Image (cartoon, rainbow, N blue to C red; front, top):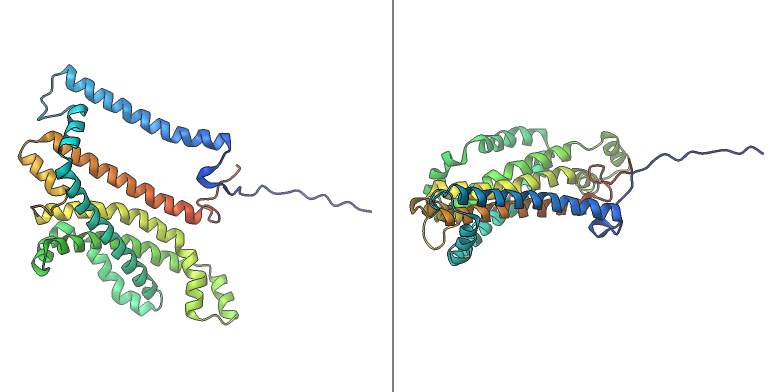
Length: 287
């Protein structure tokens, strides 16, 4: 009798437990990823506080961290509503960009003529600076809030469209031929093959578009020069600058930065949850 010896090849280790893994090594790695940035941030804040105190820097030039925290608390009745306005514009623009970008990407791959007819104009909208077309948008829209929403949507739209279209066109041709061999309709191929294959590309566009939607909402408000109770954080930044209320200006900047970081982490978490069990970019490997 002949004994056949087989050797097993190393395979990718799938993280079945996800973020709730009890593996000590993985827990330690996750803690380090949290502790190191937090420690770095704490060190920078300490250096900032020391510099202001040691060189007696006036608060209207560089406020201390304590004064910024005080401004954050005392001016929250002003900064809080402004933050909500900015968040509303950002997430509404992102939602519209998701719907419009995916729908147009699906339309573009249906015909080469449709792509040639529409895609160049999407590129033109993307490469035109938003501050250049914001005055025109303000003229042709009924309200300032609508103009801000359109500006934010224009900036967030193209990355989602471009990445999704690229993903839909990057499907393995052998799989497309297999679907055609079995008589799959165009919509069956789209739903069962093209859309799942394009998911990693779409999620990349989502991460980019999320950050750009926030940036565009702020830049559009700068360009529009909107003011009043329904204004966002951009107006509060300008107002603080004109009044030399630098602690409030720093507080508004911190709110914008934290919002951007949270949007990035939220979109990264969505990407991880959708990809970590099957896609090569997110699967945990043993080697």
